[in-house]
View 1: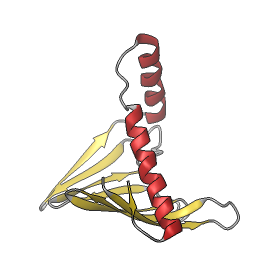
View 2 (view 1 turned 180 degrees about the vertical axis):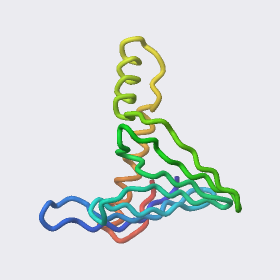
View 3 (view 1 turned 90 degrees about the vertical axis):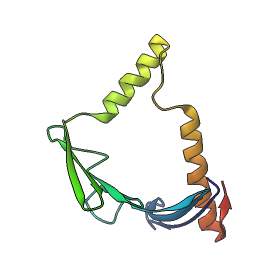
View 4 (view 1 turned 45 degrees about the vertical axis):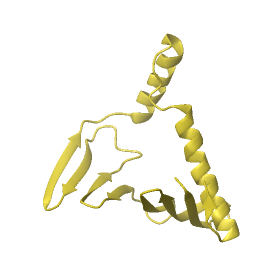
Length: 135
């Protein structure tokens, strides 16, 4: 990624971000996002591309006894994918502990987390300075 530009609204009492929007510039294209923690009691991820979209209902805290629904749409064709109930946080912890105990592959590399933090820090700095930030 090349640059980031962002805007953040903070909760006046809790002093935490409650609404953030950004533009991320890549070598071949851009991505935009909006994230809110207080907008509504609802969660959804919608990803739009040049030829279709992916929508994930309750992506972060699905009910433990309900299937997760993913909608995959390309052109005029739409597919609904149901994923059996699971606890992604338990799975993540189990895989991480197995990697430590058994010296096996870690599904998410440390470099991914560092790169994500560079983006978050770039969006915050952009909000404070009102300029694009090289990431």
